[in-house]
Length: 74
Image 1 (tube, rainbow, N blue to C red):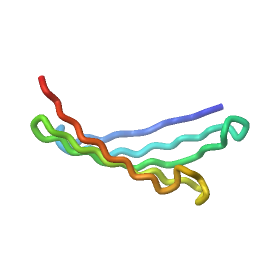
Image 2: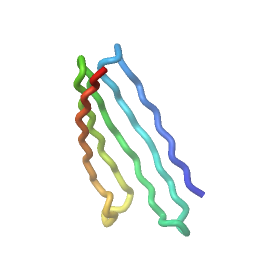
Image 3: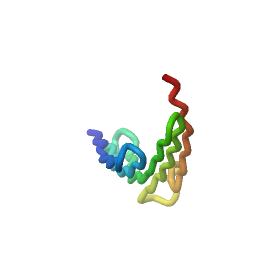
Image 4: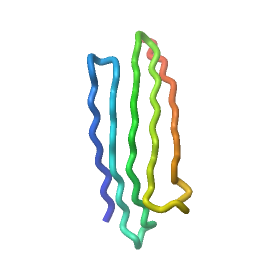
């Protein structure tokens, strides 16, 4: 049994806030974590950042930061 869920809020199609939760059955890996993130879009450029918080300090995913850069050429 695995559950992944999240919500995202955009303000004026410019700034986004995101959060999510992931749960995995202990028989399949036992990963559990919360994610928090933000995004910014301006013209053709976008920047996203997310932080992954795990309940276990020994998890290889603990305190992971992710960054992405987006170029939207239309």
